[in-house]
Length: 416
Image (tube, rainbow, N blue to C red; front, side):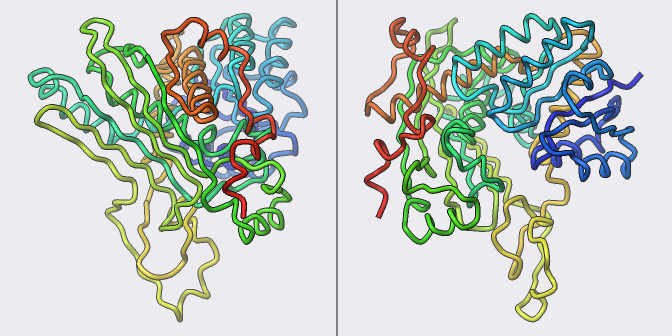
């Protein structure tokens, strides 16, 4: 029997996940619930034969009718959604799996509460970090496995995710989203670099994070012209409560068996005004290397000036595309390219077998910890030692200035 998904959220990520599910067996989208009725998503479900796609009024009601809850709603709803799901389970609902889209939570206080509720619910979990499931990444690491065994492990992995900015107002609001681009996309690149550095055959959390050093900046959206554009489009005022649009840093990891240390470098931005979304990973080891770039497509199209007026949706070609004419890179199946298909396949197989997925919610909690350490490093201008007990105690209830809405204290020098 197919697992009955109940999807919480009706926005951008839900749309992407539904497109991915058209390529996945063993799933029926039985229910949908969002803060506003997700009619567009429900219509997609029915038109593509994914299931009944019934719209529910509450998470409580839906939880009693599904096998798996998928939390695809905004970051600020993660905790309340999990609390409501736990209440439904206390009242007799039974779940075979819990999925959460990255990030698990906005800070460690929320993450620990979400984890406690998941333990109470008692279902296996899946933390959806799609980039770790990208076929290009998996194929490269599989190809390199014998070389890594012969020559030694990857020593440096550099991961980047960049585009021109999010779709919805809440992404730009640091108090709702949890910060800026570091919170939104740094979690992707930190996880991807960690995964690439991990020796073949070892668990995703095998390497131990020992330190984080990071910087954040406001390079585009702090300028008056773009602040006004942002305020006019989304009602968000970066003159008052800005968030970073650029972040970069290095996480140092240690192999617990050999004590060898390796480096994961991450770079993320909301100021990449080129073709559209770019995902980049390169990794270097002794005598070998690999590189993956999502903008290298086997398909290109050209649209001249005279024809450009007929183009209504540039994102049909590429997520967050910034152009609708000229020479365009086109990705025929973005959900598969970016790993959304394979993360669902992994979750379905795991839940059917009664276990958690490759990445569980405890892994998601660790990504939150690394992201918080990166913010703390940027605030204090120093490397954060993750082996220090006092530092970890501080991180447990730390809320970054930007997440508090106090971003001017850190980013004010970038405002013109």
